[in-house]
Length: 273
Image (cartoon, rainbow, N blue to C red; front, side):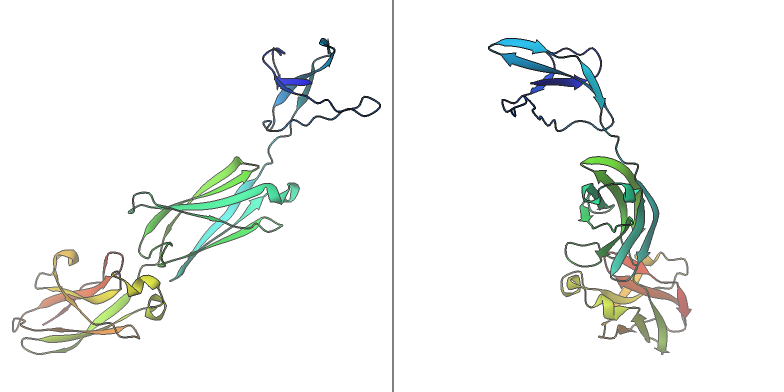
């Protein structure tokens, strides 16, 4: 048997034990000890038992290998309409068994009670990696959201390095302008940028379908969220029209774009009379 423990005041009665009854004709044997800690010194002693008599060997020390020195570097994020990409490099990967290295990326949504999205990805031989997250799809990230992210390298189950990475997913954009005006009515036309891509999002067929229109008021200092709203009908090309009636004659109004998609988004204020 082999009794072993972490070095320092070795006591065979408190040590762990592994044993074998298999020897070759020369008395040679092999014992494998698993689940040791990296970079630690252990003491061990071989004990041979023959007809209940025990013979003790000397106490010997050995030190396990240290964890590899891996570092996350050159972390970059790229935000497109329908994806978020995170790229980077693990420095020091060339000197280790890459099959023992795990890289994880997780995100928590500040507004959704700590929901996490976790992705595992393959690492190239030179340590480069690329995560691609779909946006605005079921079980994926959402548009117009802030996420707190964490990249983590693990080796054989041990965490080696971590790095935070925060992102703001794509915020829908567009424009709206006055098309025509009479003494008590006005017509506005607008367009949502990149609407062709937004329209492919599965959630656009549910209750969270994108909406567009205007906010308006006679108060130049009005908060957009507090102003009156008028919704338009989005066409397949992202254009929309809004008609206002029952306006006050000879009155200055202030208006701006409204996009409803995972929350309200408001454009710059404009005016007409």
